[in-house]
Each structure stands twice: as C-alpha cells, then as structure tokens.
Image (cartoon, rainbow, N blue to C red; front, side, top):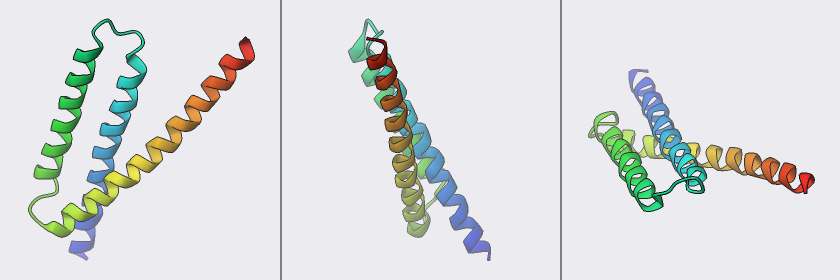
Length: 101
C-alpha cells in the first residue's frame, strides 16, 4: 500500500510539473505579441521551465525508475489536458474576434 501511495505521489508530481511547463509555454506564446524583446522572453522562459521540470524530476521523483516512469506519465497527461483546454480557449477567442468584424 505504501508503494501505491508513493507512485500516486509521483503521478501527481509529474502532472504538476507538466502543468507548470505547458501552462508556462502557453503564457509565453500569448505574451510574444506584446513583447519588445521576443528572443529574451522565449529563451528565459525556456530555461526557467526546463530547469524547474528537470530539477523537479530529479528531486521529487527520486532514483526509482518506476517513479520516474509514472511521473512522466503524469507529465504527458498534463500536456494532453493543457493542449485541449488552450485549444478550446483559442477557438472561443477566434470566434469572438471573427464575430466582431
């Protein structure tokens, strides 16, 4: 039972890391239009997001490959969820913009 809780924690940690990474990516892409220094925004965002995720996988998920695999599964699940949510958000934004023309 203890191993199950540990794997569940790894899944949750991976999902939170994925949420941070992909929500941060979505935010960065949205801010490009209003940024005066696009390259600096993209590079700093990439290093910050990647650094947090790599450190998160290293420290939170530990040295057990099963925990790392389950954490990666949580990361992928978060990617799928964020992709669907942002696609719906962008479609509703586009329909509102098209309707106002």
